Length: 123
Image 1 (tube, rainbow, N blue to C red):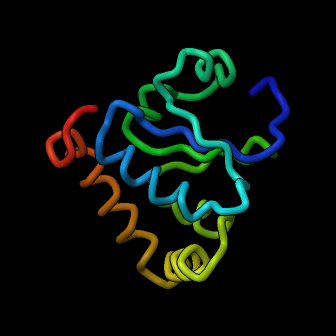
Image 2 (image 1 turned 135 degrees about the horizontal axis):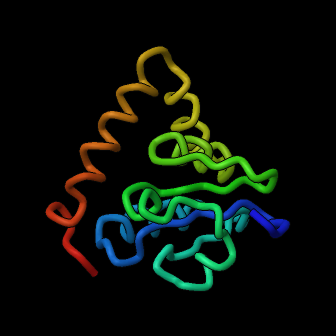
């Protein structure tokens, strides 16, 4: 990554109805605007983040932290929950830290992601 981020960036597939719905729900919880939400299909984002695996972005939500760390899939959702705070965000983040829950969340996220267009359709 070649640029400095003012706040963490969430990249999601804006051509996936299920992805848009999930992102809209998370964005609604981001009442303080602590995250920047970007459609990964926007060519500007590919220029902005040239080192990101864009094929993977189209399969899993990505969270790019201001320090350059990248979290994907269920683990990105966990960090997003922690960052947006509130009762729902904090509870989701704490739940993901319970033994076995993280692995189960990764598996469930992967299954849903692999079937997202069949489940939600394309936008």
